Image 1 (cartoon, rainbow, N blue to C red):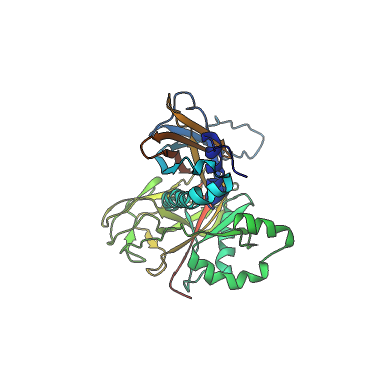
Image 2: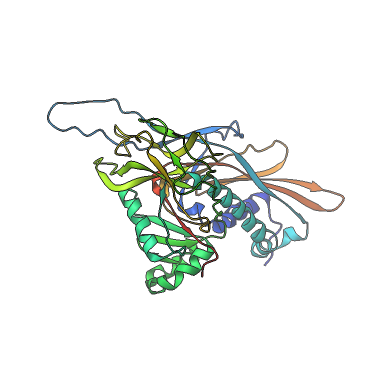
Length: 395
């Protein structure tokens, strides 16, 4: 039975509900809705401070050694206003909501979800600091186990996800077929696109995973210039070749530590290059920051002078598969203002805020609609993301 004309608020709610269903990756991360701009309206450039739990300084013995607690925050900047523009006529407004969604909403909103998720992934991957080497270029169960180990060593929560690109899915699915899956998880497979629960991860596939470009630097192309370096920049000297944001490196003698006990894990700390590096002597931007002491210590020591820098990965391994815990990344939407004297509606659902504004073309009997989301994203815990590369042509 047809509606007596679909109104703006009902359509806006349906748009937001449908968009949420189209999202795969974003539904697994921390999605923060912030209403502090609801009255004045948010705009590009506004920032939200997201608190990140800090590690404690552990005392040995009875003598108190108090230090001030310092809140650790990560700024999340509102960077994007993304939307779609739709038009329909008066007759379409008399459709029932299911037919209306199929005709006008399903495909545009799938495209919108893909664009947003791709952008978020492109910005997040150059901060996922952990890395699993892949000798044969195929995504295997063993790589997933090692990725899970790295997250455990980083004290990541037990609810973890592994998002694969389409070639990675083909390579690994035969190994995982025995894990598809207990009856109580079949509904989740159907409703949320879950592939399997295996190796400590819930597995999902996405077509939105960006490829990783590989620079021209050789595996042992650089050395450290200057001992005692800390922070998010590593000064290198001898060496040639470019590094591309998203590539991973290790530094000789710089080992990862257990975040709580500060004891070495026995494995070199991996760092991800966060900005393209043109080559030669200079400063390579990295994540996480090198922190050799204090409550946030993440390495056994600062690099020694002339310590070799190893570039990880092979030129053919441009496929990216991402293992992560929920708070690796956050995605936030904020309220857009409703214009005066316009047919407009704004709806919030599960961390998403969406606005629709309608106008009318009298000559052509068209309802003109713009749908907008104002959003930003930020990596909260670089160590809670782990990249597994694969060769997308190897089957």
